[in-house]
Image (cartoon, rainbow, N blue to C red; front, side):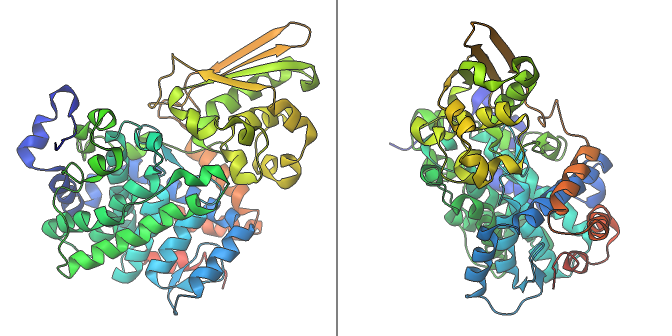
Length: 478
């Protein structure tokens, strides 16, 4: 029996009038003019790109960055596209891999909350590499980047948070479609070629959550791989390569193939993929992270930090109950034994037990709380073992990521704090000024103050840059 995803609420009549998801997204990517995008959206886009570059620069301090560069370089020839913050110029596809990898390297990058997708770290590297190929301006690159974010966010939203439940990482899976349309826009594809490119991208969509079992580096690779795959799909389509029809809601399209023909697929709302396209900007609902951890943990971390002063010495804590939505349990709560004692920083980023304990012991949650000395801290590890978790039946998930922390002291006192809406969500966004401050904190880990100011001006001045490639070449420390 074949099965088509259910369109909740009778679907979108406008979508029915104007064709398939594939066609409507292609039409949007081909026809939207830079001036059609509101100024506030474009300004916010610059700050999201700034955030991603700061994280990429900070990632270069770690061993994973240098080993990955060495592995890619071993297969690569000479190129002209910079690797952000590293002494490397690579061919366009290889640079896209590295730039996506570094931007996602610390799990500190933006998240579209409803889609549960990190859109910038695939859309931006694809747009940068395509801009280098096309000789595009900074303004044209920003437009393409926005197209990529809008596409990835919407394709992810339609899945209604189901991809995570079956072990798929949507950042890689849906990021490839955003990267395809971002690259295709800059490579000059017309509407039909962009339709075709999405059909090619379907066979390149990938991303497994198996990294959760052992802290593997593979999650970092997903958005970079999506960026390179999107660039490839757009280039093939430009030359007439034939892609599949109905890549999203076809019999073996994205939703049916990855969710299976059953209850999870029935929850898919394909109307969300194109509803109010070009009128409602999902970039503005994309959250900048205040903590370098899985976004699912942020409400609980903030709740723990809010209780720190009231509790005082965490040695007096008897037990902690953390309430988070059931849909995130597999990712940040289970299996408990591994979550109690993370073996590396990436394990720790996905352990609500460890992170709540670290926040209560340290009174903060920064990159320092993910360093080896913190992972071995006996006080944090002992407290983590006293953290239990439960469902939050009142959570607005996946619209936002709630967290409630209940602390019972040995003397019988009890403290509770709830974060119903996580900081960074659309209704509690970080300001542009806060994003700049985060950029500076991250960039100064690698660059001196003068260089930080110079590169900040490069990104925030992209709209006036005649060459996107020339602007970003200043990021490569060659």
